[in-house]
Image (tube, rainbow, N blue to C red; front, side, top):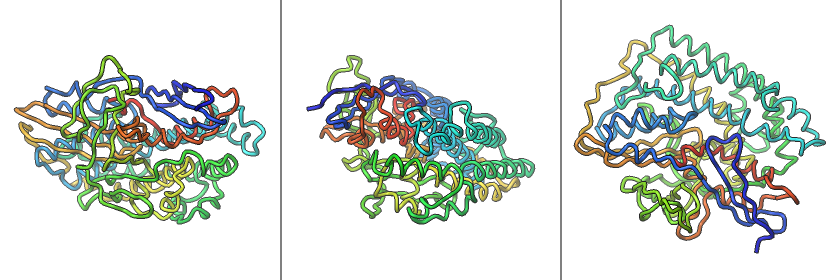
Length: 476
């Protein structure tokens, strides 16, 4: 029996609305329930619309990962219509998507996660003054250069996509704008400038050297930049043992280029990798404010329960893969790509592991973007005509910054009859399923310390933020 219950929320510095109910026993979380309290209903809006409307509406699901939604929608339409993007169109789409994911990671570290360590509650810790100096909201010496670098990176999206967010540049048949030689030079120049800032402020060393780290001891021994600051904070607060998730990781593989996806796909558990079969996805609605039965997204429906009846406690469905939970995100992506540092951290599955995986992905993404920019061929075809879709069904799977994102579409007589989306935070912040199994963040919060009199426990916030939740995508 719990000593007390806490309702933590709404969380600040989180995209969208989030509340978490905690049962606390002997000063630690004994049970958690994550609630996504704001229903939106994009899947319902899409019914009856022209298929191409998915390219306009789905990016509006989110203001910070709109290209991820756009790319998933374009791939779903391409799959339904039997359309293939030309190689250079895929490359330009990967650059657009890679820039957004990179900027998401920079924003998370500088604006969402690290400012928590500048709180007065940590005054007196050996690292606190440095955290205050570097990451105090709106004032920290690291915040301005990192966010300015992020802003400059989005100029690449402006060149290739016209605008951000909600670009319409990615289409089933490719991208709408063919870059010229001058654009390629500008993209490369912007990437070089961003590299300099990241190497100076965040890593304190070369991206190549950080990306080459192959062990936890090598990571802990990294002495440069704010990576070292976070490592010191982690060791002091024990973040390597807090927020342990299911340690079962999923990735569909990031950035589908002509030669294949850039990162590996599959499911990792206990050191073994199995194939990812999207047909094994089932969305459980037993503890969601949803009507209907468990179903695969291709056959599922969005039927909100207006009565918000128990045992439901969230507008988020509970996706399961083969009947079990999985964790998605940067760490999962790097684990399924077989990177040695991420594999060394996979069994830890902690707050530290997730942040380290995100830092690793920042370094690797810049290196990929540099290669992709150099490979742009201004004389090539970037778009093939795609006929209007009258009948068909398809799926678009991509890796957003926060993890695996899927769009499932069915079109009949030129109109959308079914559209279902499973977003990364839907995986990570799902409620319990019919078997009572908690979602990944609910399980990860168990054991988190709650101090006497704490109403918004700081360690709980570290765990939640390590997943980088995007609740507006969750309640699409």
